[in-house]
Length: 300
Length: 308
Image 1 (cartoon, each protein chain N blue to C red):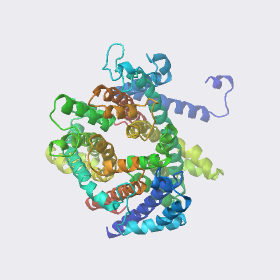
Image 2: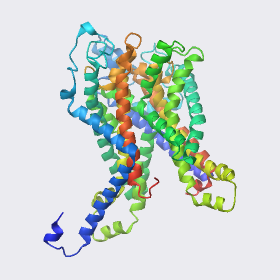
Image 3: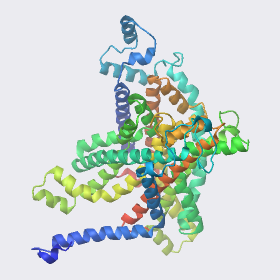
Image 4: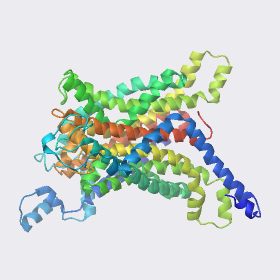
């Protein structure tokens, strides 16, 4: 940071550029803080993330320990979320469930982000036949009713935590590809890309070093909203028995038990759903806030 | 216009073809012998297994299997289900489809009726109590898992109050909960979108021009803002069809509704992949057709699109 005092560089351009970048992010951060719902979203996410990380420390009971004598007991002081249908503490299971939700939400978003950005950038940058082919593949992928496609794939590959992450990751990248392609189409005509090409940068280098950093804004917004959507998808898959398998605690499969025992133990169907709402709401609020913060035209 | 329509139809055909390839690949990447799926746990000699393989055409090269299947599908023949007593898949679909269509049609209708005016009004009265309330509810609406909402409503209205039936599709009362749950999600999404497009249109120069030339606020509102703000919503409705179909699967399972979604779910638990394959293909084709249709309507009502 203080390097410019130690050895004055030949030209101020890199320093100025660094300052401008830093300022841009700081300004975005300040805009973000002004948007109260987004801050609330960040707080919710931090809360759930801490629960996930420190689950063994904060859970009052072992989420796998079974006490058959209290099976299906309603919420009480000792067990605020009640006991599930086989006799396990629901609060501890809900806390451990945050691990599955966060793991699936973040890793599947990571996978889809990488695939989508690379394919979108390739399609937009090269244009012509490559673009036509990739765009039709994206069209086909987006045309599938998402959950229907996921169900078919989960049935084909077999349900497990790893497979859930993979199948969601390889099916939801279409939106990134579309956004990145559209941005790249306009970016590639800009002077700095021509300049890079003139000094002999390869296509790969131009895409990775010059194009992708410029589409990060919309991508970050999409990713935050996408984590929310993916957590809902994982819950739906596990609810249908095609996601994370018991006895691993996941909110979706807890709700599945809740449906089965809705007549006898209705409380099982309540709390895991609240956990989903809190987490998904957090990511949705964060995404909305980031959209407003990163958009310098400032609709707000 | 004709050129645009032809181009979009050709694109649609290519996309549907890619969809069939994807579906076929996914279900044939399944590890394990497909004969196991057909005969289940039954004990069989190698010879009998070969006969089954031959009967279902599984001994032919994979591309022959693909084109045989594609050819049959193009002739409206989706084959016979393994698990539903060998009934033609077409029959199963025909029995289930009307129930799903009724549910989704009603849900889409109610969500539009509520969401469009709410979205426009929230944009016009931006930062008022109404806008704030609408934003809170629509953000909540997209964050609540629809199947959980379904369960909560069953507990409340069926178990505690006893007003509505918890499962099944008999009588108009049985429609209320599933339609409400499906509509809630759509409502939230469409209201958010309508608010955003309305805000964008309100900042356009032609709106300022309309005001400047002395038109009344009412005319500016109806003729310049609302009409243009609702345009992009048309394209979204085509896309929503896919989301609705996805939502239906879980909701039909929650409410034991005898539609396509429950059929798909049953087919998967019985490992009846031909039924799964057919539903996934038809689902995607329906979405592509809906998108195509809305794109054409959009191009018809908005001349700018045609010349792009």
